[in-house]
Image (cartoon, rainbow, N blue to C red; front, side, top):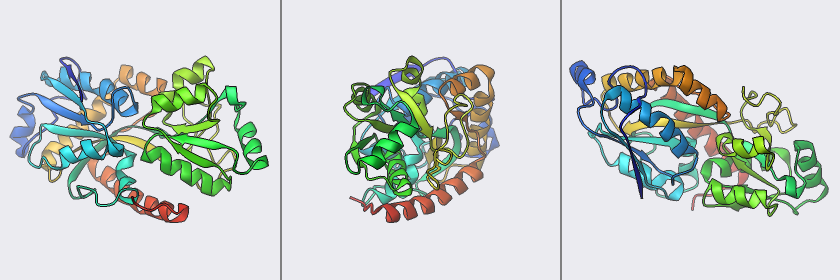
Length: 323
């Protein structure tokens, strides 16, 4: 377990994270320390997002914000902590879009994906990047696609958790390539394998690969979003690269335990959106090849419902069964 305390920083607006109920509570909240659970190890994409918004929240609320890393099981272990904290508005969760994928890869989840969480807003979103290894000769999308088509079954692709795994499987199905998945426990180990040329390509959020892309040790070949990312205007989408139907956004979202008071949820969303709109925060998000979130809670909830249906169909199409 890894814990960090932020004494300055804040997620936008005024006083937020954790109203119990009613407008008065919303105005006063928080009156004590707030815990934000990150269900992945330190150093990954979710942790980067937490470090970006955690200090801003703390500064705005004038209360300590603790980021608590509880990694394991593709975010399930940390998510369970929040799911089992109903009524605790001082325990929040920053989770990835694996939230809508885990029901189709994991049997008997220890929580209900919709009932046991309150969607507050997206924080950061972007496409998953297909990253190539120059040491393996994969400096461009054209080179990878040509090599994989000419050598069925020869090449593998790396993934790091359920979002990248499912988007990798979707890419495999839609492209028709005969390539195999290699699962890694985190982005760090996979990127090391890519830089060494031990695997030719891998799927990861762009923010974890940007420094390597800029240095040339790795190359982002394409992204899964349905439009090009503003900081990567020369990098094609999967569709533009000839792989139709594999476009998906990946996101990092803010959640609370189930049945949070609507007044608190609205306040949290508004504060988060204000922080995300700050020029310094926005510049950092864009520098990580991502886009700011800030959706209204009801819009975020609808997105989750839609994605649950989409990923269910993808799992069926790719032959993925919950384990």
